[in-house]
Image (cartoon, rainbow, N blue to C red):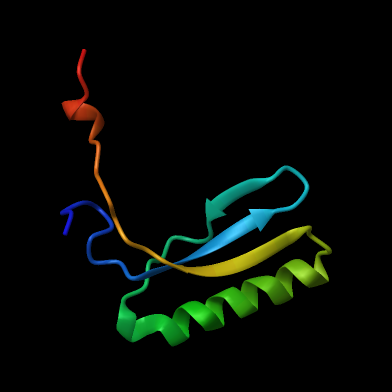
Length: 77
């Protein structure tokens, strides 16, 4: 297991913007396995708000698994 900034995170809510193809983390929260229901609820709420505002976005609850961590402080150069 990698020991990085997301090592204790199980899920994040991602926002995909169809107009520019940009994928980003939605909000400032990460979710543990015990909080999956919160992640699902937050994603549904964000989708409802976006729908009312007619925004071209889709929200995805994604499982996080760190494979590697590359701190800038340890980059060569």
